[in-house]
Image 1 (cartoon, rainbow, N blue to C red):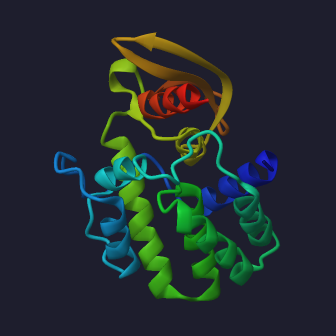
Image 2 (cartoon, rainbow, N blue to C red):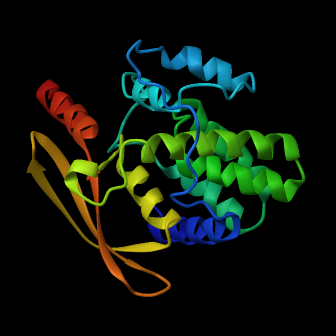
Length: 218
C-alpha cells in the first residue's frame, strides 16, 4: 500500500474541502430492519441519496466483498496516483472500479468529489458530496471518540485514519484494549497545526468478529 502517497493526497484534499467532525449527515435511523446492501446500492447508483448510511455500512459487512484487513489496494493507489498527477478522468475510472466492490469507501468518495469538481461536473460532485456526508455522519452518530464509552464504531481500519486525517490530526501511537465487553483501538494523536495531543477511541468489534470467523475457517 502506498501509504505515504495516499496520506498526502487525503491531507491536501481535506484541507481544500474542509471535511471535519461537523460534517454530519441526516440519515441515521436504527438499522433494525437489516436492509439489503445491494438494494441500497442500487438506489444510490440511481442517484437517490436518501438512504440510511449507517445501515448501508453495516449491511456491507455482511457481503462477501467485505475485507476490513485484507482488501487489494492497488487500484485505490492508482486512483490517488492519478489524482496527484491531476489526471482526474483516470482517477475517477480507477475510483469507480474500487466502488464496485466497496461503495462505503470514504477515501474514494472524497477523491471522486474533488476530481469531479476539477472536471467541472457539478452533478457528480454534488452526488459524491452527499454520499460522503452521509457516510461520515453515520460514523459520528456512534460517538465522538473521546472515551471508550463514546468510541466511534468503525467497520475498517481505513475509516479510523479517515477520521484522523479529516480532523487535521496525525497518529502518534496505536494500541488495542478490551473493556466493557468490546474491543477498541486507542489512537494517540496530535494536531498537525498546533501539536496538541489527544486520544481517540474506535470500537473495532465488527472487523474483529470478521477476523475471528475467517481465522476459524483456516
